[in-house]
Length: 222
Ligand SMILES: *Cc1c(COP(=O)(O)O)cnc(C)c1O
Image (cartoon, rainbow, N blue to C red):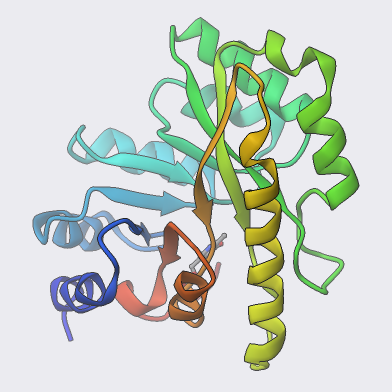
């Protein structure tokens, strides 16, 4: 099946309110163009350098989402154009995004990454860290960032009961903080679900799915 057919097939199964992020990490620009010509406008990458190279080469109406772990010293390279940063998990990183956004006269949308998986290796805030970040007095001084939602990755397992439990937990945190009143926080986006588990994620309340291999085929690395 072609990339265009894969996108059409996936889109046909998504509720209209769910955004499809086509995860194009490691894939050549020609593959992204094929997706673009099939109507796809939202792409996800996990390395800032690779995303910036692709941004330079591709049409400017693409929305670029950074879905990987972000190193503070590289924020400046994507600040001029990035549409959404999914992996924000510290105040320090928010401060740097705010600084680089201000330099570019932009307000950059961010998702807070929440640790929901069993594995120790996955990045993200635990519930206590999330609570202190969202209530941190200085948060509202960061007027060039806008926290628009949460992102999470479930445990890498075949056990759908476990995955569902983790997705439902993330959704419950998302619901819990809906009422939070901070000037630069308004939670609208819940980014959860990948090729193997996006249907389950949608059943659990996802509004944004990040799908790579089911669109572009398996990756050699990444
Ligand atoms: C690679 C990646 C995806 C996409 O994974 P697939 O299984 O290929 O759909 C989604 N989210 C993140 C954070 C990723 O790094």
